[in-house]
Image (cartoon, rainbow, N blue to C red):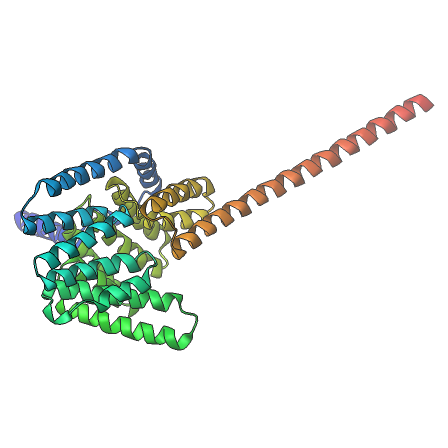
Length: 362
């Protein structure tokens, strides 16, 4: 009987571990310890950036030394991927180089895929008009499955950006409808289990407010994504957004922090998670840390792109405003304290003068 009980306990324990499915333990979230790790990573960020630069240099040397055109386009794509979250202008340069190589090889399918990748990079950096022009040059009929994923994904993102910026409700609704159509198209051609599929599945479930189902998908994504990569940071970011919808403050901050930590350690300059975490820290009154994270993010994002995007600008303003309000509150408290001290001193002086006058009269 004891043996059966022990075996049953082991099975239940194994089932519980499997069901959790995460390398991170949400049951014992220690935000203070996580913030200390982020502070350490920020102080060592130059080392992580140097490592990314080393990989870029190796890849760039391979491109220069390579004569085979097919291998050159593959190496140029690797450089695009390395620069994609790091420096926007360089990423666009290597995407254009991929297009040029593909056209020289008479491969319109490849040229179309790289134009789609470049279009997404453009719409990610407020260049929606340029994104649409690039997509109109793509011949969809020659694209393979991989090319269609990039093509539909770029259209989906561009229409999402248009919906965000328009002031007209009718155009906003139109753009959102077209975004949904292209999202459905991506889901039809994307291979289940890859990054695009997880990204879109999380979007769909969150929009439908099926947050528990979204967390299950998030569990799978985090298990699939290799730790220490930009994709892992991306998966953590989407998990934080689900917890934000669920109004779970600690787990929202935790997953923003995990995402930010992964990106810093990858030498990523296109920072979002740390900026959103800074906003929440500012709301919590931790203004010193919020300002430190915001300044680091602003420096990174300006390295990635010469202009802050609207959501980044709004986040920066939010943190600065919270810090200003806190500073004003401190000044008000100091002024009130100083006023009380002045009144007490004045009263003490009056009492001393009264007593001295009485002594003189006596």
